[in-house]
Length: 594
Image 1 (cartoon, rainbow, N blue to C red):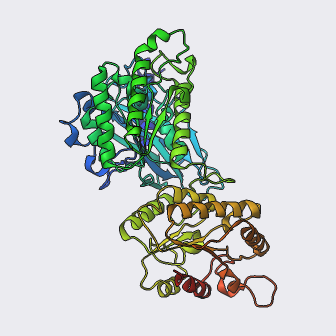
Image 2: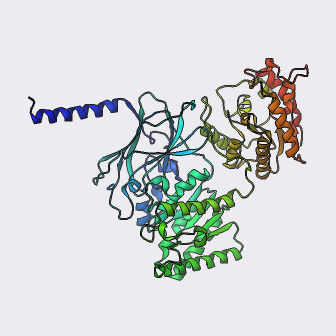
Image 3: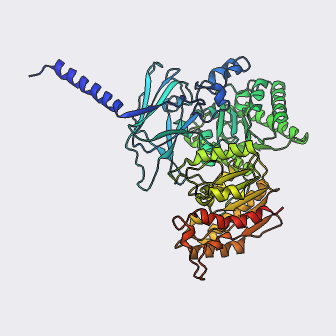
């Protein structure tokens, strides 16, 4: 009979063997092992380099010691990657004890949080099933595991994940593990101009239950814009050095939400810092600025005595805000306590919101940001979104390549579309080119960007244009060909989506001549395309700078049947070189229009 010692030893040995076996079946990846780290959600990413912090070293002696220390917390930072692995593990070492804040739970303070974006652009949270543990000793490695992730069978390629990092702790190192042999690739978020949030502990992350539920990360997921979180717990006091720091960022919009940390400032200091900071910021940027109230407990609360000083500072800030407007400062916006509509159950101790309160914060900011950045003129029948339906390229990578190319080359012509445009030729490069000869002949002497994305639908094109692809350039000609991948949907609905895209292009590029190309016919879809063409004729009103053409008619049989001529197609949908040559004749004529 074996002794108790023998049984204990064998059990321990078995556990060790299981751990080593699991490690042997896992491939590990480090987001820092790149020339520019794969860290999203921070400015100065390349300058900061291989450190998990939010500010570069040159700010150490410019900002307060508290701000510098808190900048080493990874609040708002996130890593994006693609894989089909059914098991994902995250191992990391924190810079400080993993528990200890009285109003921040360990999973928010020191945990990571995983979300997945499906191939059609919808976000879903991945639960960790309590497969984690935290230690008081910050030299210990934390591991959080996500097991048995169900990747839908119809998903033909890897799916995209977003991993939010701890809010109230820093990291020394981190690795992500997936099933051995599974494809894995880090990717970058959209490289458009970000929303920059400067705020207090509430923006920093207190007191949500996990990193994905703080309001800046909620806004990032919901609106799709990159968000830079410069929340500094207890230390957002609007010092001049901070506004100098903010002005370095080429932002889409700034959020200033600092009143709760400015209660200790006398009115003259608060006035000088707010007015001086806002003027300094506006001197460097024309980006919209959204200023927010301090938002303590509702003013009707039984705890109203707690609100007196906060109410006074909110009132002072609003008066100063109106003064700047009267001075002529443009693109200023304000969020008041009433816009947030808080109730007592939204807080954990009277200062910091719980998950319910964070949701109210996010809803208020999303509404304001949508009104400022998007306005009422958006898609009527679709929700703009990303997609990852194609195996041969990474959708977000191509999106970022287009943004970079349009910034750097100032194209004279942009070609917006799906795979039919994508496969024609040009830059950014495509692994599959079916009409390069005709492309090069057609566009000889022109600077052209191919903004075709395989599998794109109308809602995906709208998202791309809304998220930076037509920023920082002024093309002479814009060609739009989209709609065939929405086949099966009501023609009137798809036509409305195309019309909405046309309105957006006209708003973003008023100087360009816009050529709307009717979708080309496709095998067994000829009737649907005709219906869509008829709806476009009804809904789309050409003007002096917008025309509509139908070069796809040249791809039909000459017998009047309305069927496609198969000799021009590779698969009944995508043209081959001879098909593109037919189409190029119409494009050549359109390029001559001024």
